[in-house]
Image (cartoon, rainbow, N blue to C red; front, side, top):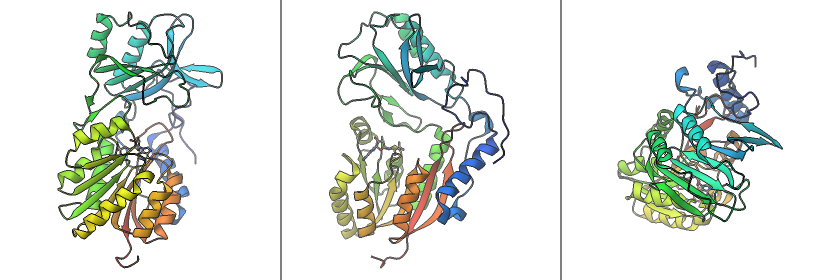
Amino acid sequence: MRKLMLMLPQGCNPECRGCSHRDWSMTDSLEQKRAFIKGKLPEWASCVEPVRSVTEDKRWGYRTKTTLSARFNGNIWEFGMWRRDEFIPITNCPVHTPGLNKTLSLLANSFPREHSFALAYIVISGAQAVLVIKSKQEPTLSWLSEEVVKGLASLGIEGLWYHMNPSTGRRIFEKSGWRLIWGKPRSTDYNGLLYGPAAFQQLIPELYNQSLLEAENFLNPGIQSAVIDLYCGTGNSMLRWANRDADVLGIELGGEAVECARLNVPQAMVLRGACRQRVPQIADWADKKRSQGKEILLYVNPPRTGLETEVLEWITKQGLPIRIAYLSCSPGTLSKNLKLLCTNGYRLVRCVPFDFFPQTHHVETLALLEKVSADTH
Ligand SMILES: C[S@@+](CC[C@H](N)C(=O)[O-])C[C@H]1O[C@@H](n2cnc3c(N)ncnc32)[C@H](O)[C@@H]1O
């Protein structure tokens, strides 16, 4: 595909590989994303709708969360990413919100200027900031002056954590080793739901809510429905089903997300664990709801690895969900999962891509499926 090359915006480090569409026009980027999905889903290419995005002015400065490596270069603290042995500093990233960049700069200028402050990563998620320390020993707090705290608060930060993780590597967060060093442990997201420093959160509320609305319109839950929400996070989707008086079961692996989801959607039953391990409970719950005369609906939003084999087996063998909304961040695993679902009683009705990560090659896809006929299974 021929594409128009644009100038990089101010602050963008040409060495950074984070945004491979950053010098493409919006039209080129969205066309490439749609073509990429069609290429991954050739059987359903005609179902793939144009990619929904936000207006040009909202395609920069949208990231309210980031995870960056940290290093002390002998003089100052820097945040960025490692490529093999080379450190690529990211100081004023144009896809970050200005507030996020200011928070990073304030913290970098406040930390003790010494290698013994064993900071490995900084993770900022909305109003919660985590300093991941590659040591068992908690570092000094002498740097956290009233002035720093005031500065953080003025930038919208509400909770600051040390996370002691001596073995931190690719896996940044462990279950233990968390200590809130300032502020409060939970904040409220754009939809009014509680979240903590480790929970997953989608960016660009306008688009995310559009994807939830599409799923809601398709699933059409009501008092007659029982909705199974897999990989439910803090409960943004579950709240929609519960608000329409459906019975709701959510499954989520992250402890903090489960804790928040239970508070955010008290009407729902939320189980903690990997979905594959919760299949027996999912099956029991669905059978019970069926015997009460409820229709079964399914909403899934798994990580890149897609639906687990055990979950797919339950769906295809029992065939209980009459409609499925599947929000996927990986067209590759979506394609594999769709092949199985569509040769086992389901039909893809629509495929709506969303540009949740402008400037990058990433694209999210909402696949809407219905059961072919009630007596297929
Ligand atoms: C793409 S996020 C979606 C979260 C939520 N649906 C939302 O929109 O905010 C995937 C979620 O699945 C959780 N997760 C990852 N592996 C899981 C598994 N095997 N079983 C259940 N949840 C899992 C993650 O903790 C994360 O919250």
